[in-house]
Amino acid sequence: TGYSPQVKAFVTQDIPLYHNLEMKHLPGADPELVLLSIRYEELERIPLSDMTREEINQLVQELGFYRKETPDAPVPEEFQFAPAKPLPILLPPQATTTDGKNPPKWDKEEHPDL
Image (tube, rainbow, N blue to C red):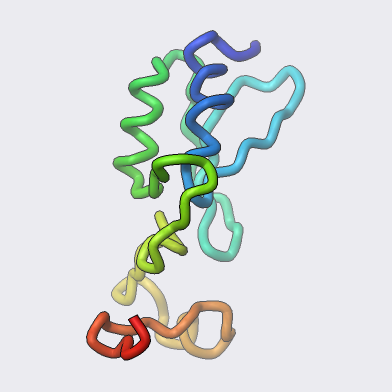
């Protein structure tokens, strides 16, 4: 078990650039990417041990995580909830409206303050 140099480089240098991507270190555990829903339900686990730093970066970006220029760079509003994507077809209607957790979705035209 443990982190290869490739994974370690991703963890220390790349994770701080990704919005909504957090590192949780579990001693003795193999590194894996755990994808959670907006309700923090586990969706998928992807083992990272055999991947190169380049492959992990590619995977994370394909999944829709927003990569900032620097760790402190602001995140554009449309990426605040990235990689969460609205899935209106898969969600029952009450899931998006009654619990109040999901922010209202606006079109760009409806932002007079931008």
